[in-house]
Length: 222
Image (cartoon, rainbow, N blue to C red; front, top):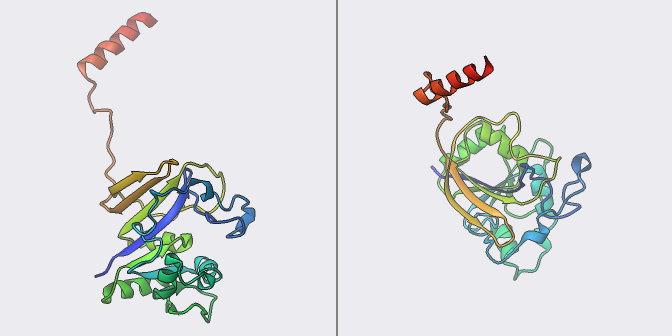
């Protein structure tokens, strides 16, 4: 079974809306689009985290598809990112689109969860989500995402679309790789882990030291 990998940019407060430019996604009156722009440096290899879709098939939500479709097909052929994204097979989750203009694109049939389950069971390269916050939330709740590439930028945006919302399924992830850019971007890769196992730093019975502290406080009070 092939893996489903999600890659996204987020702020410190978990917002992923419009990282690339002011006009990318102003939904809800969001005015801080392009918040990643001043943090790029040579250490930030987008290919390593799947942001260029190289050797993978893309799974995109409607909004991300429309942003990509309006930009990447019109970039020069010698742009390596445009070349890989344009060539990649693309699956689009949408309830409103009926036709797709970007080459190698197809609409997912039926509900997204069932469609992705079917895609994962088929032979082929790994599946790659880029952006597509609503789709990530839907598939995370269904425990279908195997790996997360989360690049956390040192900004606080306050409002906007978040990576995980109230519908997120509680789950433990395992960090397998992390790197920090010269500009302070933390590039982390997580794989699906296990259930969250709550614990407590307070034991059922107080220690001798704690008992002595309580007795001392009681004497001071009286």
